[in-house]
Image (cartoon, rainbow, N blue to C red; front, side, top):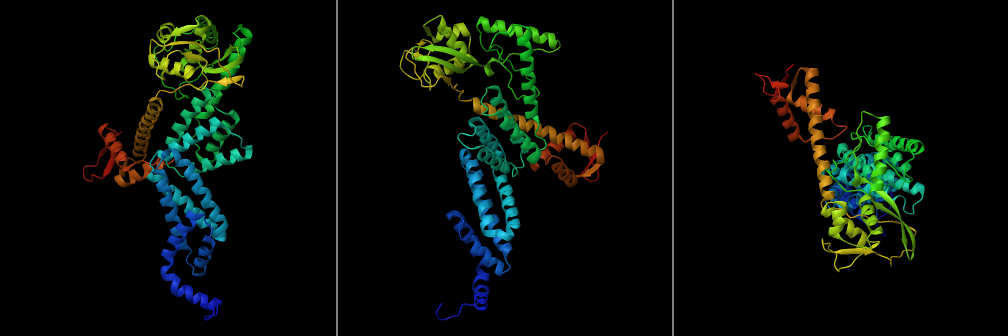
Amino acid sequence: MRSVLPRSPATVGVAEESFMRPRLGWACEAGVAAYMDSGGDGLADLHALCGRLEAHDVLRGAWFDYLCSKVTQIVTGDASAMVEALLDLRTRALKVVEESFMERRGIFTHALDDAFSKGFGAGKTKPAEMIAKFLDAKMQSGQSGMADVEFSELLDRVLALFRYTSDKDVFRTFYTRALARRLLKARSASDDAEKKVIQKLREEHDPEFGKGDEMFKDLDLSRDLLEEFQRKASAPKGMSVMVLQQSAWPIAPRGAKEVDLPSEMLSALGKYGQYYKTKHSNRKLEWHHALGTATLSARFPGGNKELSVTLFQAVVLLLFNDSPRLSMAEIEERTHLDADELKRTLQSLALGKHRVIKKLSPGKDVKAEDEFEFNESFTDARTKLRLPSIQAPTETVEDDSRARAQIDGERQYTLDAAIVRLMKAKRTMMHSDLVQEVVEAVAKHFKPQVDLLKKRIEKMIDEGYMERDEEHRNKYVYVA
């Protein structure tokens, strides 16, 4: 062909007009998929072809459809790999926009954002939940060898995904719960990084995100009060207390009795409680020992160690100061720990990564008759060790269930308030207008399902806040 037909702008134009325009939709669809799946090289040529044919809208449509389909596949697939896959797809797509779509990058960036937003909808509330959990993991592990700039860029990329979800309330709930766990159990890699994320969330993505500030305020006030207590009341050395407002912290109610503490700990808590009463006589302290942590000094023949443990682990380990060998039944009798909690605690100490006590019988299960003793042969090259605890198999599931139940309850309340507020202001409204304005009113929190919204309207009618017009059944009248 090249040796017969002269290659000139005119002949190329005729060929493209005759052969490519009728097939351009197919070419863009196949080309975007092929090039994106193979790395993105080649889309600049397709973009140039569409430019010559004045058909950028066709390429934009194919670009949108491809990304929307990919996002939909990701958010409806393996939840554990969701965020990494979304980050990878978005990074590759942005690179293609910069390198291949050049002067038209604006419309293709908007198409990318629209595709991600629409695709997120297929996953319902799951993307918002998984983004919060992904951030939780990153905030616990910290930079892990990454430079400050690299870690900051990673957080920015993750938060950019947050823009695409309409379920802001889901993210807030799961992220706030995870933040509380990190702060209370000292699992956060950096308070400064935590505060930066909260600031960025509020300033750039979600002005309604504010509970994190209350948490840090509680911690700052607790430190100030503890310092004052240590100066004025001869406080025990090394004691740390965090006084938390229930309204600011998503903490599950404590059990009636969690554990019997050693007398030294009880005495220290009693002194603090008395001092706190002198500062806040109208307040009542409730101790949540399940959230407590401790640092123990342990002397092994192989070297002294500093052990960071949960309060339950500490209570169990301290028993071995007086008794070289103890059965689970004896430990349960002395601590009054819940049997299942005690089993998990003993497993973490005798069968976990750092086995500072020994289980004398074989097997990974722990029974009442099993005996344990201090592990004198324990060695580790590090001086400071953190002994991981073992979560209950249902703990995460139950925590997630509580979070979802909280979200459902808050959504119903938010919809009820919006319906009544609008009806009170307008006095009469058509059904379609009420639905539209309620959706707009709660958009900064979530996008309500139509069925749920209808149920809340009926609920408000049943409770006497409004009624149907006798002549027009799709018209509502506010009842003063």
